[in-house]
Amino acid sequence: MTVFRTCLLGALGAVLFACTPAPPPTPKPAPAPAPDPVDGVYRGTSTRYLARSRTCPHPGLVTLYVQDSQFYYRWDYATWVTANIGPDGTVHGQADRISLLGKRNGRHMEGDVTNGVCGLHFTVTWHDM
Image (tube, rainbow, N blue to C red):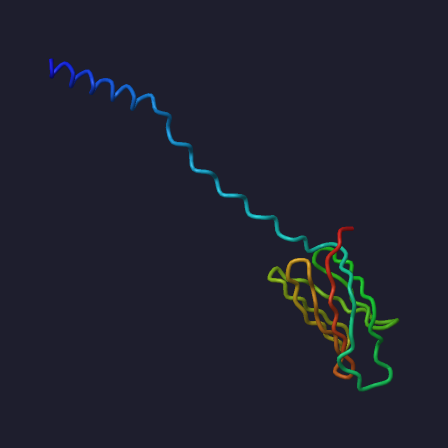
């Protein structure tokens, strides 16, 4: 009888083990968030950090329209600085003797525009069109 009980308990254990549900699958990792868009409208302000001439441009409100990672920064009434945003977020631009250097980080971009006599620092934030 003991052999029968052992076999019966063994068979019952095998049946119970076979009926237990499989462990749930491991959850898939969340997808990486989409990168912040580069193209769009950036709005903010500029401040003057260098003024060795009375003819330096005035600081104020700034609006940049970025398309294909490129934009134009208005230096004065007749001069526009062409600038590009690189894949790593660096911003470079140039016009005549004027240079623009900056950095884009997420939806925020800032930089300096100077000709060596005058200098403006701009800070802008991306806005949905």
